[in-house]
Image (cartoon, rainbow, N blue to C red; front, side, top):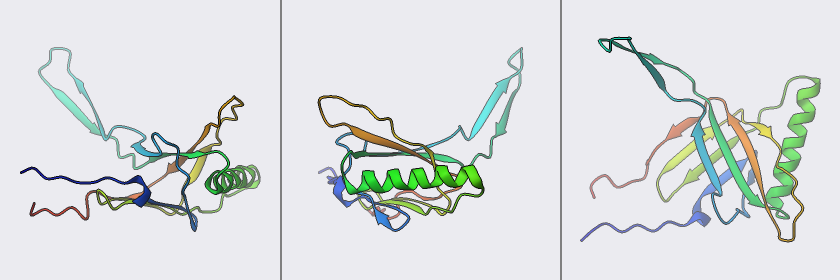
Length: 151
């Protein structure tokens, strides 16, 4: 018999500063991606040699999509605007970020998250989602920490 596992987005815990983000968009609620590949390679003209360069880029991009009108939308918009205002006059205050998925055991933690852009402002006949992009300069990452390896 195969292994069956359940997935429930409601159990994913995402916090920005001390606020737990809820009110997720129906699709692609949160995603994380490295800003660059971990390495690049180049082959010699005759194909006899390949050199590999490690890029050493620890940055990750996080996209959070929430429903407009939720507390999360208002709070994230306020935090993004506050960071933008701080950037105009000097240093930006650190912003704690964490996302933990108990379904898979994946966890990302960053002490100095930065909003890269504020969400678009569409006006249409139906309610829309808001997409916030954050830079995670050097997150601590744990993959599958709670997976039962004996199964």
